[in-house]
Each structure stands twice: as structure tokens, then as C-alpha cells.
Length: 493
Image 1 (cartoon, rainbow, N blue to C red):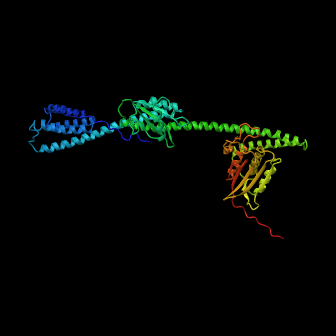
Image 2 (cartoon, rainbow, N blue to C red):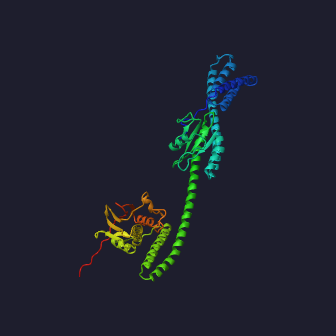
Image 3 (cartoon, helix red, strand yellow):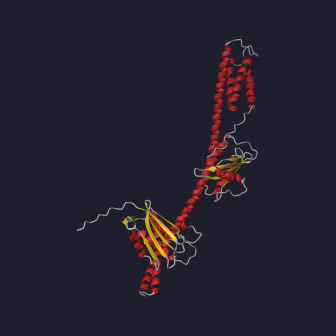
């Protein structure tokens, strides 16, 4: 927490207390003159010592020290023979005066210390009570408006002024609320330093702006307006520093409560969405299977084949929905085995209806085995190949290449179609339910690339997209090569 201010203004010394100390000694002298009619001179000394102690208790160290000197001088001048003179007839009185002065000074200073400790204890109790009251109110605050009301009704009167809470908007800018100087408040928020009256920055301003800083960031600004009042005393400064910390923590707590509430709503929404997707996907599988079966009964006609292709495509979308729900709830569980990459590519091509499109496969025979979950990785390839068929014309060419890139294995899937729409963020296509165009005649729900990224990243790899020159789309998959197991060859007979 930034200290404010750099120094604590000391309370000015009240010189009138010295006059009070002298007056008390004069009054004691009169009392002593009356007591000498009954008591001995040695007994009257105690009256002066009592006066010194009372003066120190009431008016402090300086008044007590002056009272000690004046009391000894009065005792010598008015009561020790010869009276009305500072001349001492018996040298033993010198020792008495010296001892009396020392005792008076020590007694006075001890009394003054006792008084200071009592005042400090009372101030500490008041500060603790004030902090406890404000802390109790802040602990039950659930909104920023509650904290602002506590500043106005609780903290302001304790500091003899008006305290206003200034909070930034979602854009981290101070709104023009009509309270204080927005520019100063914005500077305090950004720099985390105090400004205004009583500080080194803009001290001529009528208000004081204090940052409400937490370990994470500055959450807001506290504005204190005191008019023409005196500077804050030490007790009020201690309260102000404590209030800064309490308010900052309260604002941060309210912020995280709101974040937790929003997160809870988001989680609940995700749960309901996953439940809906799972139910819809399961309900769609049965009619799709029936449609595909009845289309197969129509023979090898072009219409029947088109129905089969569309049913297969819809089946893949349903599979994507089910996989998205399963991965969201259970995470990615891999069954890792060593596989030849060209075999996985061939299997994925066989499962994807490419039509009349040409396919160029360039995978070196010496490429090592790769440790993959064959089912999931084949699903990634099918999604990429299916995207190519949906967004390229029937005479397009699909290029599948593999090779080494440093210590990684690179698999590249390209096409020479129209490519990605201009002006879109290509990497954003990997988000759930993201598509290249908001309204499109191309079937799909925008889950294929999202699932592909999750599966590839679960394998410790990465997938990215880019534009192919002069036109077309390109997807790059990077995988760790690992150390394939040695293959034992049988000896020829």
C-alpha cells in the first residue's frame, strides 16, 4: 500500500500549558503557606511533589519539568530561611533542593509518560472500534454500491470530511460521475500513487485522491474532501491507511464474487448445452441409420448415392457433436499405439467421399512410426478432408504431404480451392461453433476444427491454418516423433 502522506504532521505545542503549570505552583505555594501553620516544613515538600505529578499528568512533559523547577524555587524563596530570598543559611538545604528537584523531575516525567500511554491506549481503542465497525460493514457488502455507501456514511465522519469511492468501468476508464477531477482520478488509478491535497502531486487541489491497491492491481480511487479543515492528525492518518487496505480488499472480494457468479452461470450453461447436444445427437442417429439403409435399397442410382453421401455427412456431424460432449465432460483419453502415418491417411481417405477430386499423397516410405490414438487421429484427418470437400469445387486437388521439421513430424493438408474468406481471423476458426461465414449454404455446425485441435494438442502436438498461395487453404499438424520400437525381422528359411 502506498503510504500517505510521506510525513505525519505533529500537533503544535500549546505554550499556554506552561502558564497553567506556573499558576498551579503559585496556587500550591498559597496552600503550603496555610499548611505550615499546622505541619513541619518537611511535610510541605510533598504538596509540591504532588503538584508536579498532577501537572505532568494533565499537561505533559514540558509542563511537568517547568513545574518541578518552579516548585523548588518557590519552596526555597518563600519557606526556607531566610525567607523572601534565594540565599540558603544552612548548606544542608542545598542537598534538599537538589534531591527535591530530581524527585520532582523524575516523578513528573513518569506521570507524563503514563499520561501519553493512556492517551495512546484510548486512541488505539477508538481506532480499533472504528476499524471493527467499518470492517463488519464491508464484510457483508455484496455490491460496489454498498461499499460506496459505507465510505459516505461511515468513513467520512470519522475523517471529518466527505469520502467518495471512484471505480473504473470495464474499459478501465474513470467515468465522468460529477465527483472530483476525472483526470486526476485516472492518473491515480494508472500510476497507483496518491495525488491532490497533502501529497507531492498536485498539492493545490482541494481534494485528496488515494489509490485502492491490492496485490493484483489498483481497483479504484478513494477521494477525501475536507474543505478548509486542519490536516489529518496521526490517529486519522492511521485510520485512513487502514481504510485504504480494507476498501481495496472489499472491492476485490466483490469483484471475485461477481466473477464466480458469472463462472457458475457459464458452467451451468455449458452443462445444459452439452446435455441438449447429447440428447439431440443420440436421437438423430436412429433416423440417419434408417435413411441410409433405405437409400441403399434404391440401388446404385445417382439420387440414392447422393442420399447416402448426405446421410454419411450428417452422421459425421452427429459424431462430432457426441465427441464434443464427451471430450467436454470426460477429457481426452488416448489409447496410444505406434502406427504408420500413411496407413492412417489412407484409412481416413477411404472414409471420406471425395467425389471426383484428385488426391496427391506425398509421404516418404522411410518416415518413422508415430505414437498415436488411431481412432481419434483418423477422426482429425476425416474432419480436414471433409472440410476440403465442402469448401472446394468438384475438380479441386487435395495435397497431403508429410516430412520432418527439426525434431517434429509435419503433416500438411492443402487444397487449391477458393481458400478462406477474406477479412477473417483464421485461427479463430478453431473455436467451438466457429465458421468462416455466419450464414452459409454449406452444412456443418463448426465443431470439426475445434475437436481436431483438442485431439492434436492431447497428443502433445499443434495444428494451425494458413492461406495457400496463390489460392486455397492449408492445415499444418506438428507431432513429436518419439522413439519407435525396434522391429525384429525373421530370418529367411
